[in-house]
Image (cartoon, rainbow, N blue to C red):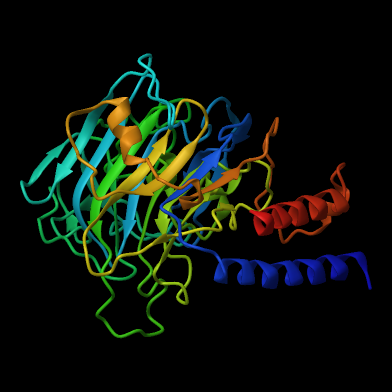
Length: 398
């Protein structure tokens, strides 16, 4: 058997094993990742040409480097939601310092800097957008202001109505109300598409995104027209991504493929596990396959009958935790002790934890299918196989 065929065979077996692992994963109250943040880089989009013609192309720019706690998710992030889903409240908070499960007096308060309330029809430092703008062969649909239903196009910033249910495949996104400067290579928001409403996302090393939402069962009949039937999700993206292209046909048209950052807070990952919400990092912290990402092999149960409250915390010590809590509040200020109170569990077995690898840099390609990269890398094929099997063995023993 040739080296390439051997690699494909090995990964086929590993894929089947991973499917089995996910199928036997157990439910947790919280999904936590530790040692989050590394030194790496990504390539932003430098130029977009002929975006509405068949000659549409994108040119990647020079690498931009990041490092430190929670990097690259310490950058500006946009919020994205996919149906079936209804959003009742959204809050974004920042703190000077917060450490999960540490209630010492040295920790400050969480300050709310963005808020939406569907019932009260209030939106502070919030801009709702959706992918219903101009279509492009290489970029897909452009961002535009979302109408009050979340999915139709509006001419200006609009508050989502109280009954803002969206169905399968339908999405809307949330940015801050701070407008970007003019598009440009050396500008704060980088290069982005012409004619879009360009806003910053939400920034901070220590930050918290909170949601009150429903994920009811999809009532429409399934068909081949759906890509994500009854698979709701809430996730975060480096805000450069949606301003250029969230779903490009050309990888150069988004910094996503070079690892600028995505975190899936609550995501149904396949149609056979529709009541399981997983969390996943899509960064190059110790991995090469960005599409698979760094997954939680435990899940949070999706409640299809009742309202859910929860979110994600990126703390000051490199821990990220997705959680659900019925006692969650959206007050203007939250103390460190009250937030840690939301995370209290009587049994540590109710918290899934995965430690990310410590690395000095990032991979340069997202194509795990390029098997030769495993053979030509200085660390060698067996390094990666050992890493994979060690990780799987660790999971089995936990």
